[in-house]
Amino acid sequence: GLLLLFEGGRWVWPGIRENFQRRVALPLPKGQEMNVTLKTLTLDPLSFTIEDFFDKASAERMIQLAKPKLRPAEILTQDSQKENAEDLGVEVRTCWETWLSPADGPDLENVAQRSAAL
Image (cartoon, rainbow, N blue to C red; front, side, top):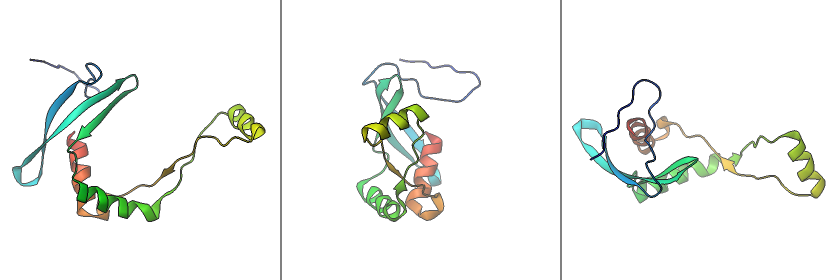
């Protein structure tokens, strides 16, 4: 078995080791639970995958809500990096982002509750 004891501060699941997996029970409304698998991808930076967090239908609905709201993300770089990239005619890393509110739909409210529980 494994005992984890923490006092104060912000809770973060410990990584243990790469590829370490643990089952986590998340509370749902009406006293129900759902189980997800938390798998450690990397220790530095600490990152995880969460299997069974939501189903394919919920994911598709969230994607449809997000698509019309996507916009280029602002990427912060040091001035020297930006100048060097512009001089070389190279585009600095880009990505797209959006924010969805739990009020945008029941799927998002459920994701917000599960995220908080996790």
